[in-house]
Image 1 (cartoon, rainbow over the protein chains, first blue to last red):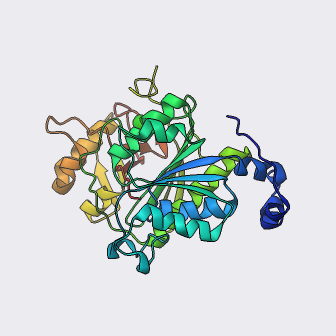
Image 2: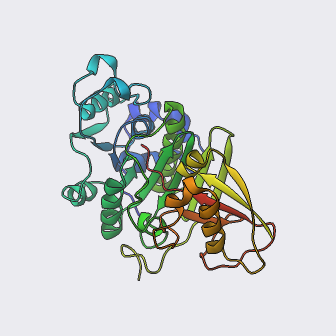
Image 3: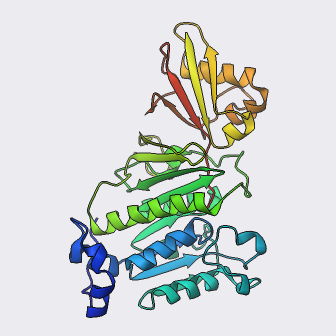
Length: 250
Length: 89
């Protein structure tokens, strides 16, 4: 997968100087990040810190899809939401915080969650997608569109003190439906969560996106990284495509 | 033969523990182990098997960190890892 490069101006070169020292990344990698548009669904406990890392790393544009208004119960983990923004739209709160961090960043705040109706359009605007949604229906809608449009999707999820991350490259790796062929009936919308645990998944997912776009390092393509913050056990297991997968199979 | 079961996600929460042991006859498959677990740990049953007794396809199953088929045979000392699907964000 090829991503377009956009030349850096002097201010950007100064801002990203330290990360451009990373071997195999350099100015060429930074120019790829500047040329990239990421779709993030949603920007809560996982998507929020993920957006922050993408913004600080120098992605050119982030599209945030997240419905609803900021509530008290968001504030233990959704670090792009602030107390003074209670009752106001989440997507706008997140966009405001990201622009404060990086005024060069283009942010499109979409006050909707991903659905069957909007997935094709939103995925079509992005070069890669970060899946941070709390419902499998949203995740499956994005997965289907990413496969159809051949867009990479970084899949990140957490529950309690555990997290899982994999990088989906359509046609090369298992897609989400290979892993979970049906909507899991036991998954509940509300779940135990510390912000620090979702931020671990967010940081790893952001780094995956940086590597996919700039083309360096080894990604989690075809591998599932699982961690348990209760024991600090990290495991990386190979995962297989399902030839019978209704979304990406033969 | 003795098999170790590791539970992740909601399965661990429902069971109240992350590691269990099972005794199975020689030649038993992964599917046999999951069904036996569902019969011994009643709280896990609905998360592991459908009403007709087939294993739920939504759980990820690994043996010694390799993704396997439910019909694969087990060996003494194997560790089965069962991960329930998670989507927290």
